[in-house]
Image (cartoon, rainbow, N blue to C red):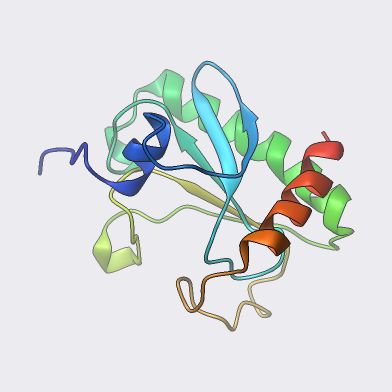
Length: 138
């Protein structure tokens, strides 16, 4: 299956859709999930066009893990979270909802994740407040 350059994350990378940015470098972008499973839920995406982890170059995969680690540390500190779930899904059958490789960074535990992804859209004001708190923790 060919990469769909019109997916929402590709549009965010091109600046066509705004996001609440937490971190950015040459290879990755991290931002707030607008449909969070917990307060502080962040996403890390590669700037490389790749639908799944298997489509990423080794360099982009390594960059995503490094950024996920940085973001997880900031989220843990900002949210005073006892645990962080770093989740990466590949394909619709696995629960992937956007066809661009991405990593979820969720201050929670697997047992506490009772709210499914995409269950509700968070208020922009609340997301902005959480994003500011997380950015300050880098």
